[in-house]
View 1: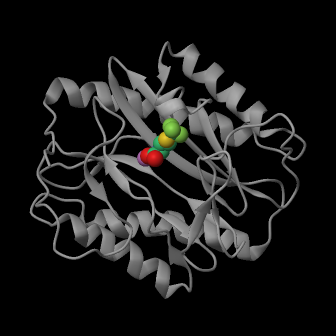
View 2: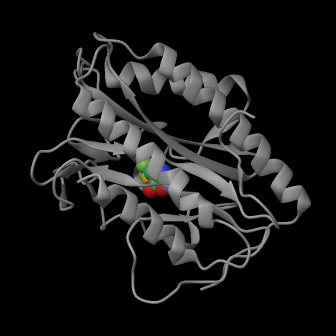
Length: 251
Ligand code: MF3
Ligand code: CO
């Protein structure tokens, strides 16, 4: 396993990829409303990414047919946008997107409300986002990778939810997926020692019910086995000498 340490120039490119991706998510949040299709979201996302002369990281990645992953309610991640999948009031929708700028990727996900949602769904979204912030308290040089994983899992489970185990976060850079894997649950061992210049996509996927998932027949869409709703929150994070720098949120 080789974890790639980025130099200043690479970090600058990833900062720009992250800045643009933050704008993509902000614009898509405004676009979400009952009545639109998940394909409308993909089209809008592609249009915004194109306007920055960037490339959508996911388009054609291992054959993935769209620019934005759009996952509704019990869909965990990697939902394929469709003309006939119409969002309705009360749904929650997870959008995962990536942008390539000068050969460097950013990767980030958000779960948004469609119109008015139940307090339970809002709490699921909030706990998922908060678990990311619990995790990155340990995203610092001198800490071990699995301290991040443990913090995410502890926070999520203390709220009665579960973290998905079949999918994990990852290093990110000139490739969308680099070493190391970043689990949202505590595996065996401490994991690697974090160093300045590492760039990680930290991405809790949280189920309201049990953690088990399965794949739909399209071989992409991951859904909860128990049919409970699921939320996703992801950012591209730079490890520094001090506090982590979140590259994919607007500063
Ligand atoms: N953000 C996703 C991940 O890290 C990438 C989606 S895979 C794709 O797994 F094929 F949909 F692009
Ligand atoms: Co990712």
